[in-house]
Image 1: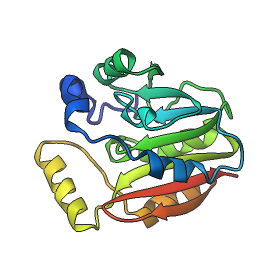
Image 2 (image 1 turned 180 degrees about the vertical axis):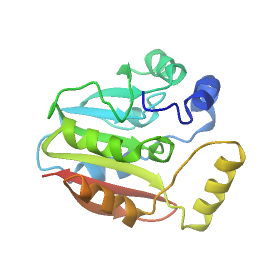
Image 3 (image 1 turned 180 degrees about the horizontal axis):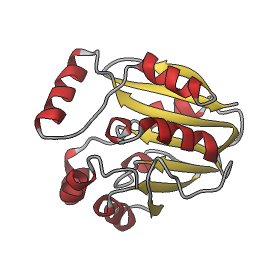
Image 4 (image 1 turned 120 degrees about the vertical axis):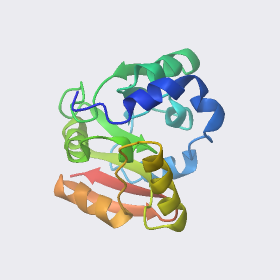
Length: 191
């Protein structure tokens, strides 16, 4: 794997994670996925941990991919989803083999964000979508989150919505900022 990033932290907190984290915003994810120009039958939840985001979605076949074995154990115990250990920067899937991917509240933890975007572009079929739900470091609450994660030793690297949209465009996605605020959604449609 490209690097552990914050994986050890998530391995340690896996048993408590779903108890302390609010549910994922299924409406925001569905609004992002609606930008795809192809049907979404197969979806990857990259950095999906315990399957919290996958639980907020209905319809497609969802596979949770995460580097934290502890979080994947939770996903397998509590969710009716496939869960695979994998690096977001080296996804274990064939080119164009999925219709969409989500990265929910996890992009800032990925050690090689560029590789993760390029891998999503590789595995998502044309017309499919990458939906990233993240936290804006320019928002007052975002600045507090950045400071708190760094204070506990996380290697988090947050991006503003515009910066993330630019990175998606560089990888061949047609980017759209779906919503803004402390939490925001950026979608890239695979061209």
